[in-house]
Length: 235
Length: 270
Image (cartoon, rainbow over all chains, first blue to last red):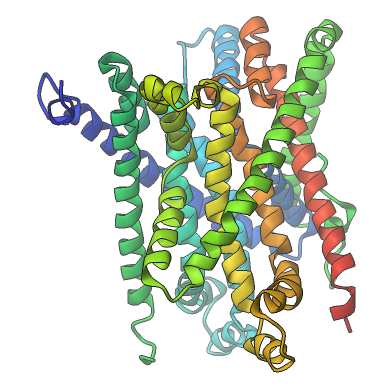
């Protein structure tokens, strides 16, 4: 069969399977992003608090999850949590609980994302002059309001390039979840390659699909970047 | 854990009573640590060490050698790519840009699959040109993908570092009548490499982590040996051992980098 038939949609081609894989990849990345961003933000707050125990805790978290290979983190979550859940349900007699590969991927990649994001947020926080916070407090705004109305809008602008890089890494790391059976782009390509005996065609297609996703992402990030800088004078 | 250097625990400038959030957070970590100690105390199995100790060490060696060789090969490839990125020639610039974008924009695992499984489809062709021995071995395929992948990242590191050297250094060299290659290698590069030291170290750490992927294509690196040990015993501590070894490797490298940077920038301190 020629390449066009193999990549086409319908019963003879693998186009629809690959398209479903794209949906799974994008869904997983988008579902992981808010977890990673929120956790990373709170970790960065913990790292600048003057409570040294909180700081130490956040540093331990970052050290572990930045140092472990993403694949190993994924396996630790998938096998470790599932084994723990199994012994828990055996001990308590509750119905069997299990973490799906999608949720494992979300947890593992979210945790890794947050470890890196906390460093991005931390350096962005340091780039905002102290006077901004003091000015807000002097105007009588509360601590939460200062954070939401004064610090956060500037923080997003400064952190955006770093977060954009992390988003790209996240998008690429979702391919690792195919190893524990998630039906993403790479998994679908693998199945198609095995059945059709055309590995070069299908892995090549998978790579092109990832490339398209990265290009679309960088266009989107560029758009957000321009939007955050809309108040600045054009150079 | 190996990472929490005592310096991290240095008290804040205005010593305060630890607050409730910090106590809870550290309490969680202490609970995790205690759980691990109990887990290891009950699950620890010396026969496992006897059975898999050597294979873990050989796996560690495979990981380290794979990363070392591909890092050096990647450094060699990255030099022309970085020069291409900085060239005024649109063809060279375009090619270098496409190379960098391709390898940085797609997952390493997909690149490895393309090389290992995809190129296997052209078995006859590679046999004809006498290259089949290379693409037949998972180790070489992993090496090739890792080397090209890191070359793309290193090219960007190198470009950033070279562009960070002030133009006056070039002009000064030229006014002394030095040829361009001498200026590049003797004046610009040494200064660029100091800037590039930290990004390079980060890249090595990223490679150590990424190299675990080659286990999927049957290379018995540290992660591959771990998977093998797990599939034979179904004992979760096999993964914990691997995690500790990876963390020790990465942390050792991180501290070595900090030390090297302090040594190399002594003349810049005031």
